[in-house]
Length: 161
Image (cartoon, rainbow, N blue to C red):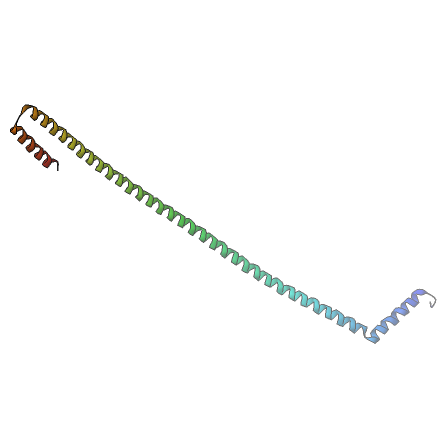
């Protein structure tokens, strides 16, 4: 049995374990494992905390985005309302302008008609006076004719004015 390799491997193993125990290797290994366990636990806690902070940030940014979207929709709605109001005001102003221009044109037409009628009457009166003067001058002679012509011209001038 002392000549077999397995025996010596077993003896060496037992001696090595005894030396480890004597020098406190099991305590050092335990402490190293405890330190590593604590470090891993701390890293997990830090990761959990970072995850919670990230979730809070995500929720905050979602809230901000939704708020910004609502605000943008409100701005668009207000702009559309303003555009409609401005369009209605412009339409009303245009209709008012057209109505005023139409009224002014009708007034000018009425004035032109009145002036044309007055011009025609004046021309007719002048033509009648000239014709009467011509007829009277050919039929009536002398001072009677002159008196009649002057009287007719004065009366005609008074009627025209």
